[in-house]
Length: 586
Image 1 (cartoon, one colour):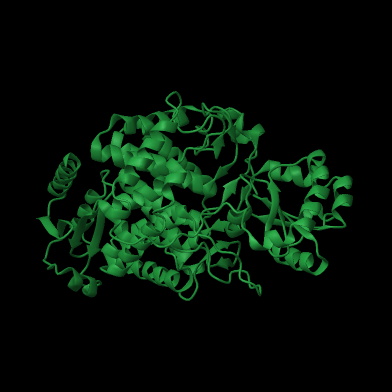
Image 2: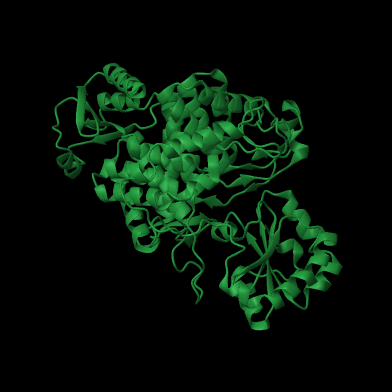
């Protein structure tokens, strides 16, 4: 959020605020905001702009404002459940108290209470972590993953999803409702394997209700962030890139699995919003978000044509762009739109050129230059995007930066108890090391990406890291229910070995491209596709043990068994479907 309009407020950066709080024995008030949230702007103006509040803050408090999108480490640590979030923090970075939106009348009586509590409990705050909400460190589980988790996790998440599912409108929750795309992804995987009609209902009822509801912008395309009501009718009107990229991927896979035209149409609407509104033609990357503007979105199609569009936050976020790359590659094949592959490739090239360092990995955001290295979320989603791009473009060279990112994480983020911390040990150039946590969501994304990278790079150590991640969270999953569907998906991939298609030949040849597209056309979630060109990939080809020939050939394998060799794309697809059916019947 811009500070220019509020120069009368003594806002500081997080680092400046902590330094002042420590020097003057004051409490730091951290306001977490996002650019697209009108309630953040309202609270800044109406609450912190109130003379009574400003006067009450002078003696014991220091004001700090942080953009949550640009500082996800602080957002993860101090977010109170939405934006704006207000965190009262000691000079030692202990959370004293927190809340979301507060009016002047609500904030004023809290200030003396919080100061009094802090004065009485300084030592307790230093010793304890009673206010943190992150996953506590667990000893690393030992033994085979089948023993520590097995199919118990899949069954547990499935039971939780069905128990909490809204059979009237789809989704989960009685009030505010988010789509929870990870849960929908997991349900599709289970349906494809078992044919369970309950899993089909989870996906189709949710997507159908969303598409027909107010959360879907059928005019400009895309989806608003969440619905205020159970029936998806009353949205918060902001649009954010990460939400839409994840929903696009979900819609594409639902279209592949169920072939419902409404899913294809909604997916094309998301693509239209991304490419016409959010794509930066100069860099080839995508902007971050479009602001909440109810007055604009209640207009009809003709009225919107001439109305000024809601403001766009032009910040380029690495993790969100990686999600967009992932979704667009899937869409390019599923929708027969090869131009989307080029858009995805251009975006990925920008990330690698401007936000990637072989020493520090991915930086978090770009606003004309790069900022904030060392966040797990950027490394995890970029490994995922590079693995995806390698499969869709047939370019094994894209595995090299993915492998380097994995190596950097081992060097800088690895937790002694297993898994990976949310950021590197020193992230903000301060003397003391900030508290580090392990996010089960981002570790799950990383585990799945590393599992696929291990197959493509023929480097078993990446699979071992994925197993370590899974085992390190083995004791935590039950308390989260369906919220850890992404974790269950990663576990399922490891327990359910991938169906691997290795195409050997000239990667630019028409025959190789046809095989590559055919192999990725249908919904097979465990599928991994690799293109090995003898001219460009001699090392990987020698590791594979496969032979090249004049015409491109596809080798289909499962675990250590070759199931067939194919030159005809149709025969390859038919065999892949047959294998998946047989696996589902077992």
